[in-house]
Amino acid sequence: MNLVLDVGNSLLKIALFEKSELIQKFKFSENYKRNIEDIISKYKVTHSIISNVGRIDDTIINILKESTNLLLVSNQLKIPFKNLYKSKNTLGQDRLALVSAAAFNFPKENVLIVDVGSCITYDFKNNNNEYLGGGISPGISMRFKSLNTFTSNLPLIDFDSIYQLIGNNTKNSITSGVVNGTISEINGIIQQYREEFKNIRIILTGGDSNFLLKRIKNTIFADRNFLLIGLNKLLEDNS
Image (cartoon, helix red, strand yellow):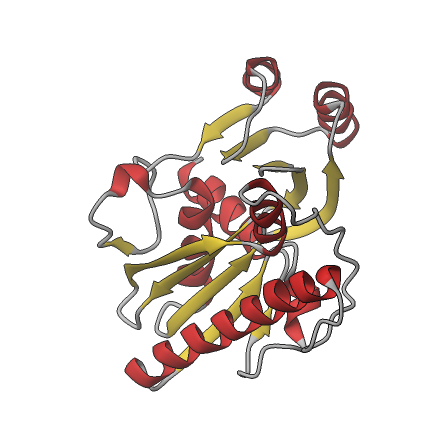
């Protein structure tokens, strides 16, 4: 059994795979150590991989090393695509896994992966299985927090998915600006890629993908598990 761990900025996401089949998923915001130990024991995990773009205690790494064959994501791994990114050492582990999933599932297609989480990342792989790069911008929650942090009077909004175009008070105006701005950004960037690459598959993934799916004009393929699938592919190829 493979254990896949995605350490983000706010949550630890875990998935269990039997070879390439996704068996079960978990999310944790605390008690990482106890929960991981229980999962390893209950499901007889033999191999694990961890992508870390947040913070995780070294204790967790040691548990995985002691109990499983642990693989750490890095640019030294065998990957299923040609990496043309200029600064390979700075390429995020999550982005490496996302492109791996695209290369594995759609090797002969132009693919743009839009991952909407704490940050919004855009990653493009062409039909020659070459990764060219992409873009990074703030996610929805980060935009709300930045308006509150870097201004004197704007409040921190607890977004509940309700928004409108014309805000009739400060809360609604902030919500309108953040949400409509994010939607317009994603639609606009997708359109630019479509103009340059005529045949292109768009993949939407990440924590905010369900909310944004119906609000993106372009025809897209949504899969919230895309990053986990990519990590498991890296684990299978490098074990």
